[in-house]
Amino acid sequence: MKNEIFEKALLAALEVRKNAYAPYSNFAVGAAIVTTDGTIFTGVNVENSSFGATNCAERTALFSAVTAGYRDFEAIFIASNLSGKAVFPCGICRQVLADFNPEMRVILVNSETKKVEQDLLLSDIFPGVFEFGK
Image 1 (cartoon, rainbow, N blue to C red):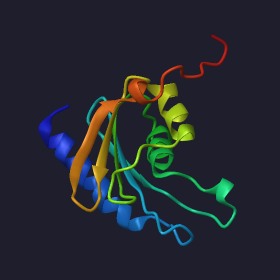
Image 2 (tube, helix red, strand yellow; image 1 turned 90 degrees about the horizontal axis):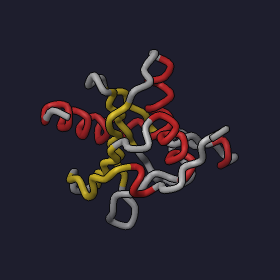
Image 3 (cartoon, rainbow, N blue to C red; image 1 turned 90 degrees about the vertical axis):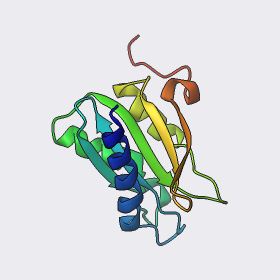
Image 4 (cartoon, rainbow, N blue to C red; image 1 turned 30 degrees about the horizontal axis):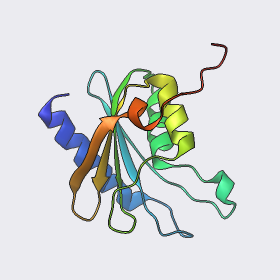
């Protein structure tokens, strides 16, 4: 990924985080997913009083990209902060992302420091991905 796209996606995840709807947990997350052609889609977590109906930022970004016709993803930037640290995607998000690219880069950004804490592969944090019919 080109440096300018990396920086643009990092800033997009930090900026969109401000739009998160998290009235119950006050845990705002912003995500920016990067397609293989460098297009960036963003998303935020949207909570619901029935927590099971909540949608994570990672899936919101991915679903926006899929809605626009994209299927090939290179990386996802996740801007969050909990107890002073960036946060990994939940298990549901890991599975959804893995359906598209189990080798996708997952870049964890601390929203307080605005620094990348970890840059790793999805397969490193989600081994043994479920594959329907295989």
